[in-house]
Image 1 (cartoon, rainbow, N blue to C red):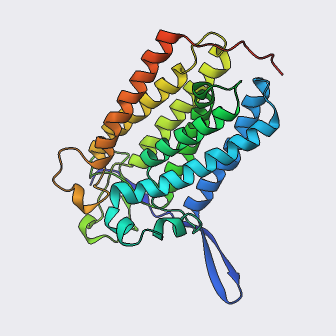
Image 2: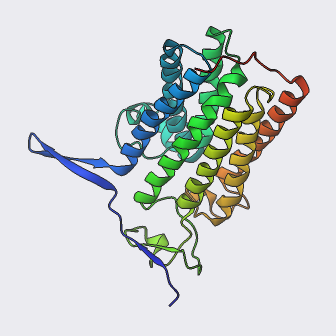
Image 3: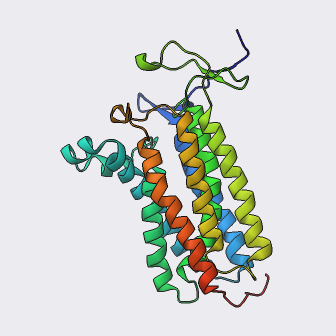
Length: 283
């Protein structure tokens, strides 16, 4: 048999025992929380370099967290489990505060984050909408790395069988439809590595080109590249829901197409208008 990587990681980091009850602390929930903590530190550095006050960052953080959590959870139910959403309309609200926060849809989060950032920018005339998004996508890339790593530790959202030497044997699989256990594409790892590439790209563009690039270029490039890759990697993934079986394009791909078009439109709009802010003094 060809070589493969046996993957038997526990989805739980540790277990807390209190009041006679065991409470598992999941890797995924920790990665989700860590994305906010590290993202806040990175955004603090960005705001400091851009000469923006710390109070603005705190307000932006609140808007971003609400947009991320609400959109990702609601998007999951709306795109993948709409029967449950309409039969139990308050179910997704309860899941907002119930670890380990499994079941997140990046497409839903994208929509609500953009809405939240628009509302934030309305309160800050010196921070236009696309100026803000140009910086938040850097943090989003970081969050993508951590969340997809959480998926890997959970042995979920992986790909179709493969004979490639880096195929993963996800030995904790219990779904009869995916048994027997065979080497599969570690698509979580593919997406995490692509988010690492996006993190380096967007951070370098901001760090070295923000004084000359039209506002919105980083945003348009990020959205176009992210969802183009998402469209392609979905060909290697298992179906996330039963209704996707037999579809030429799955739900993730259908949602990625308009996202790519939005990214291309932003690139065109940014270059056509060439919006620039007066560079803030370096801290």
